[in-house]
Image (cartoon, rainbow, N blue to C red; front, side):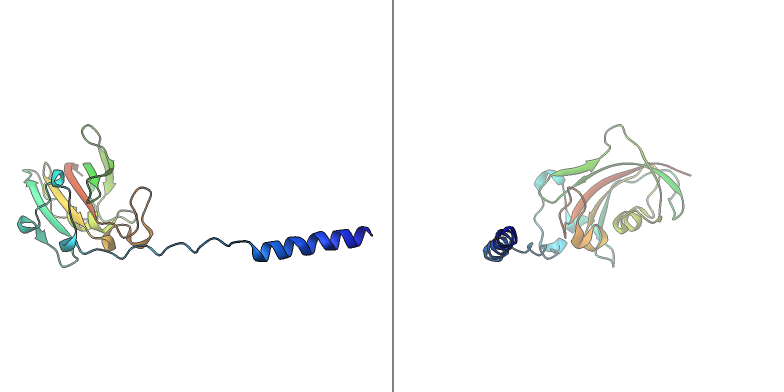
Length: 160
């Protein structure tokens, strides 16, 4: 009798489980948007017409040309930066008083920074418009959604 009750309960749960709604599969991430097709919040001051475009698809524009040494791959840099999504949402930054130390060209730094900061001068400020492929790609990262374009204002404080 006890086995029959257990079997009945088990069969009931299997049948109910089979009939219950299953969660819908997660939606696929949005496809990457070309920088030229993106809409940027006016407050970001993005001006593709006056920006340079690298073969990688990265856009960059010097806001202030520094007067110090030209930075090179392998140098330890100290940077001030702010990052935004095209709609003007700030997702990261250390302005106005922070300083981020990192080695230019090192693993763990997004390609858009390694490519976009290369050749700047100490004391310079540059706007980087980074396509998804040079940022966090289809996976996104924290507040940066999948396939997102990112806009950064970066400043080289020092290079060693």
